[in-house]
Length: 106
Image (cartoon, rainbow, N blue to C red; front, side, top):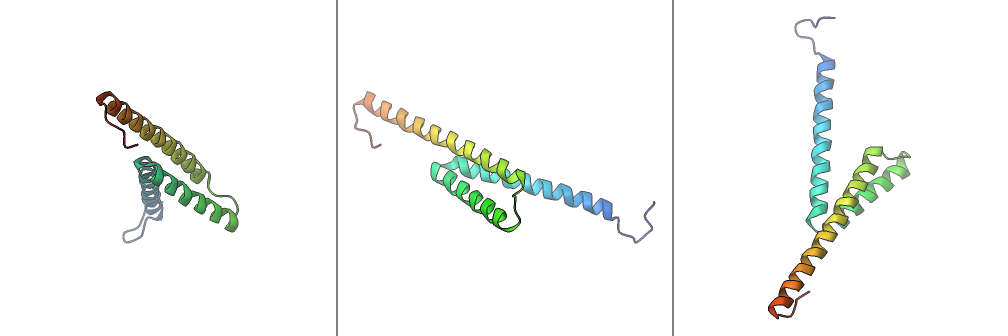
């Protein structure tokens, strides 16, 4: 049915809102993954925040959205990879210091 002049196209507004919400969620996921990768500590803090939100949703409305569980798993993976990268970095620094005959700080 055509839209009369001055009428609001609710379907178009809903599509626009759906796109905006999708983009917002995608940016949030990217930000959380980036925070988790900054350091092992920031990864743990992001994980704790997600755990708290999931627990809150479980106690209130039952089951949290699957998307939140998936994000938590992704953040855990990113944090584990960051832990491994930091451990490798420290091992390389210690090895370089040993080659130069300097005591390592780590």
